[in-house]
Image (cartoon, rainbow, N blue to C red):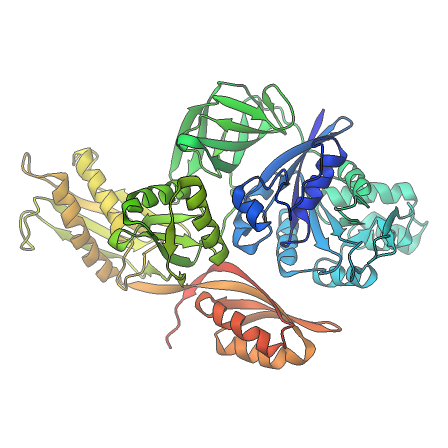
Length: 620
């Protein structure tokens, strides 16, 4: 039995979950089709997902065709959850990218295809909803080649498109359109097309399989997830064109945790994709995690419950299992050695404060949010002022989903302040400060502390180290300094958090038995502030990469508006009916542009953006 791990990806509402239901139903994994509208689908099993009709978390389901088990990973479609999608991509053997035959290529579709091609992940394209009024085929294919990728060719054709009688038929094996498209990426096919003899159907089949497998070419299928048209052809394409991950000779288990689900009593269920070796029930496992400061943390536990997706027995290479018993497990934790394949995400740039609607639940709210953030490293939570909890998120929809999660999973009603963009500080240069005990600052701190602050590599976060002799301070005092350094760096010289810094303890001393950990916690912020003032800092603001599609007559006013809001353009591509404008924009100006776009484009403009890092704040 072979296993294929396939991701289904799409812009929101393109029909991902409906296709998943159709695949499971057609192959006997479920006995009736669920409906997104009715809220009874197999993969959108959370109450919030059922209510909203959108996928929020990656889910796994399986079906079997012959001797192949296909694990389907249904991923979110909303841009607020793009990081959830990208984390799932790491464990896939291939992907199916959905588009609607009515809406066509949308902003999120382009983002997903760019990511899939960057990873060189084998990807098939499925054009859904061919039976919907307004569905297109010929001009849609031209749009796909222009706006998504030129390296695509249909393996099926459709008649009666846009009607309830739409039907799908396979294209002939020696279709010259396929040869022309493959010639763009396959030198052997190019030579045969140019110099002859013409490539045979068998030549095209081999080239199609090879170029699909290396992620350079994308077979396209038409169909309808609701009535099943074109779905058998898609399944045949998945089995024939997407190779399973190669089996390796390693005996030690190696895998990746790509999703974590909370359970009753704080228990966590980890979804682990295994690449090598085997994991058995009750086996003791040690997961590795690379922290922001470069340290490696071990998370040990026992596989108390091991549920392999789609089969019984131990977890073997190529398969996925839900495992409980790994306390403290997080998304991205590795079984086996750490690699450099860990995906990197731009950090969330929207900051908000959450407060319990009922003051008696303030402590419970903070505990719940910290627990959710501990499971998902892309949600940042920390204590805020006046009993509130500060959060970093990707967007307003994520905030709404989090509020609903608190009600349904924890019984806590919370109010969120309107999101605001978070700025960051980074040290400019090296600065140093020290204080000898006792009382040089008019304080009563019985401690000696010397700290050096210097810039760290971009993306390193905060790192604390020391040059003092090991054992010069009791561990409790040393820990008090380190914890207080990181806590104090949450408020830099302008009040923004400091990041990408390296703080070194260069001097230390204490007086036994007078000195306490409280002395070091009290003196550390004072010395650190002076060192930071000596180093000085630069203020950075987050940016969003954006794409906007506007009518031909709206190009001038839209680009003028974007430029006035500080946009930097990376491309402007014209088509027969619209312009596609791409670039980067300060995150604090994104909402203003979104609100102005409908008026500038007569309601026809389409906008998409996502965090893309940060830049030094320009003087006004």
